[in-house]
Amino acid sequence: MNWDRIEGNWEQFKGNVRQQWGKLTDDDMDNIQGKRQELSGKIQERYGKSKDEADREIDDWVARH
Image (cartoon, rainbow, N blue to C red):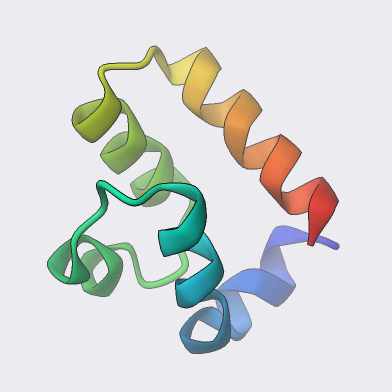
């Protein structure tokens, strides 16, 4: 799956994202609005991860969905 599909159907994917990264709040999800860079930034912020780590986690998650 590609990110464009996730971004276009963000409302449908929000639940899956919250399952994967439970520390993200409803406000975070609303602010992300399907933008990959926003998601990466919030993962970095909430989990104390580097940009590379967050991007790798996102890539792994996208590959599974």
